Amino acid sequence: MLINGIEEIYKPNYFIANETVSHVIRITAEMKEPVNARALQKAADAALCRYSYFKVKAEVEGGEYINAANDLPFEVTEGIRRIRLLSAENHYYPLAIQYEDRTIALDISHMLTDGHGLIPFLKTLLLYYAEFLTGKTLASPGINRVETPLFEDELGAPDRKIDYDSITAPLSKKKDVEDIFRLEELGLKNAGRKTVSHLKVDETAFMKYTKSVDGSPSVIMSALLARILWQLSGTEKPMSMNIAVDHRPMLENEHSYRQLSNTIPVFYWQKQSSWPIDRLCTAGRGSVMLQTDAQNILYYRKLAMLGMEKMNQIPSIEKKRELIRNLSAQTIGRFTSGVSYPGRIDLGGAAEYTERLSVLVDSVPDNGLLVEILAFKGSFYITFMQGFDDETIVREFMALLDSERIPYSYLGTEALRLSTVEPEEQNGNGHSA
Image 1: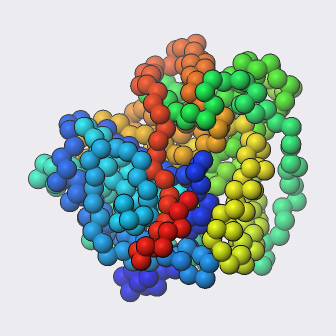
Image 2: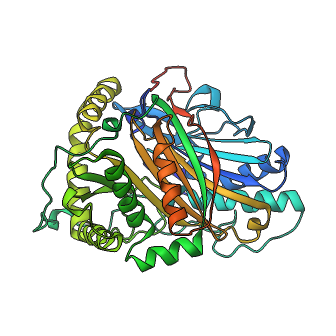
């Protein structure tokens, strides 16, 4: 596939999605006024013109999915619902843009990109939407426009600067811990009925508390969740908190759109359950710093690449999907909860027309929990994606905010129903997930 005369070869692992976990990211933007469909369609067309590597479809080549140029029109749709990405229903695109009342929802396959790769597209989309809506040219510091050239590291293999042959195993490696606490042991209600709870938390107050206990947004959330789960369960088992990490800094690549995030496990042990929260955060932050050392990350990526080389020797997509499903079943209980903090979003002049932003991800198994934290306009928008319909953990977190006098608003709980990934080739050969 040629982009600006450059050959771009990318083989996303779309086969990893399945009927239980779709691995789709959704960012929602609640606008101050009802969405104007015509302005949103024009904004989508403009954004896809700049980020043409999202204007793709999936084709099968040598038993693998490969991105190919998609010349079909991209259509914004009314009504936020579950769409089959990469299928004829969506003109074979890996992303969908929908709207309903005042909300814009952007869905995309997590196998194609991650939050750090999607946020620049979102910022461009909302900037153009506000400009087409108002007829004004708005301030746009750090936001790409149609005429903004692609960055040198935006396309191509994101780790091309790395000599993996020279990467050796780190001196210190964590041992696998099998007997960790799992949320299913809490006996929460309605397992398998996925929900998402939304909170708006005052950023200044929460960061003041975070800094006072030697934390960061991801670390303090992981430590607080461990504390809550110990209190609810009385277990003596360790808590394994998966914290999302962006690999771009270690790859010396700031602008790649590809899926370059993964998670590291941070363990909190029962003997630490009585520690004050600042000491717990210090332990968690130390574990994160050790595991995000460049040598550790690059060695992990080296092992992952070797694993994918073996996976690519399997000639059938269906057999790959079956293998991934079996591996997922074996590893699904290897962590207690997950936490992700993609950072702060500045929308420039479009912020005036945007009320709030939220990130949702469907990578949550039954009885699972993932917390996403996003900073926007002086607030943290926190989403609790749960593999059950039970607000016990969320209520305990709100009680903790009350005890620390941190202002917040509970914005409600709803079913978690993101789009699915069901690749079909344009000639009609389905390879659905």
